[in-house]
Length: 156
Image (tube, rainbow, N blue to C red):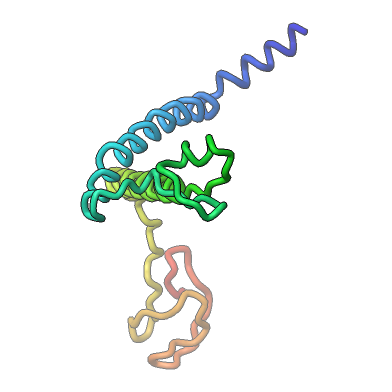
């Protein structure tokens, strides 16, 4: 049993597990912020633009009658299709996706660029001094036959 807890402690203390836990906690808090942003800022503005319509409360009663609210329809025992709540969830998703996209773009700009691997020194023909491909056995410029390649990538 002691070996089990020791292995568990090693697993938990790995950096990627702790990073994942921190990411989940921050993601949860970020989700609450964006939900509040959608519910308290965007939806009222969207309702104002659409003529004081509360999008999040929009529904269709499946019995064909009209009710004051989805809660009233459900209290009457009628099933409802709550498309307004769905639209609000879609808007939540789009805003979260946009924020994550912008955050990743920002991180990519802040991260130092990876240096490119140095290119090998160009191989030059020993006769005409033109650049030639590394694997060439004949110079495409002067048609000279190329023999062995020395350590510097030049003809011997």
